Picture 1 (cartoon, rainbow, N blue to C red):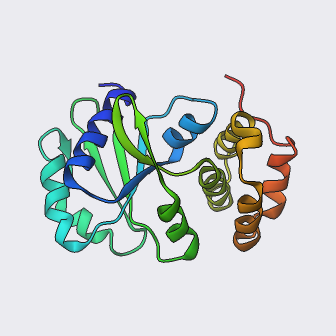
Picture 2 (tube, rainbow, N blue to C red; picture 1 turned 90 degrees about the horizontal axis):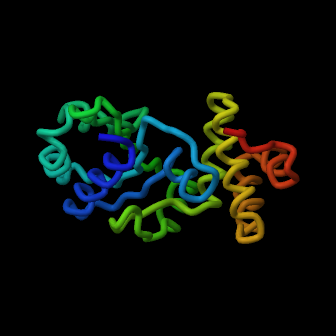
Length: 189
């Protein structure tokens, strides 16, 4: 199973559960920007405690998923994963934090079709901002390159007012302005 097949499989499973989710991380930046290889899928998922058993059931069998780890995701770092037993590829699930930016990302998610499957994905602007947040937590040329790739591909389609508003709130103005002025370049592959 490759990353594309894994993505389709996860989308089908999430859609069957009726969960509120969106694709984020590198696969979302691949959708909006310049694609690169990634071996991890990232989803943000709203997960009321009453839905834990359904998620575990849906991913059991072809994935290693631990119900205790899913239940522990209600505490920091608000994350659990599922490992595909066919490929050893990892799927990370993040619970949205109660902060305003996470709430806004969930509200703005978009419905698209990925490889024939209906899917929810975060917006291009939110990918950029989220990559900048992650770069601040753990500096990485990969995060900045992904964000620059989205800026390069989306260019004039980006809502720059939205980007600047949230960059101000998230204290990311210098990083965003470097991206928007092309001082940070996408990674060349």
